[in-house]
Length: 80
Image (cartoon, rainbow, N blue to C red):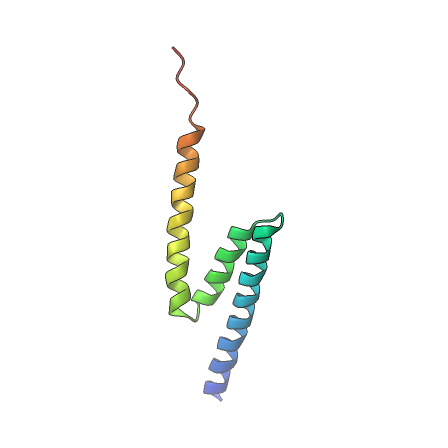
């Protein structure tokens, strides 16, 4: 019974995670928070799959670089 429970959990997490990823990819072309939804899908999948954990870490690093780049562009020009 325990093996059945584990398999069911893994399948449910995979279905929810891949569905979330698919919605995120669709939102990249439509107005919506596509990147955020993709990261959420990776987070869900990373609960059961190591490959998703690796992609999630890469996505977090890319997001951090994007935030730092946006912050550096926001600085107002110096007044003389």
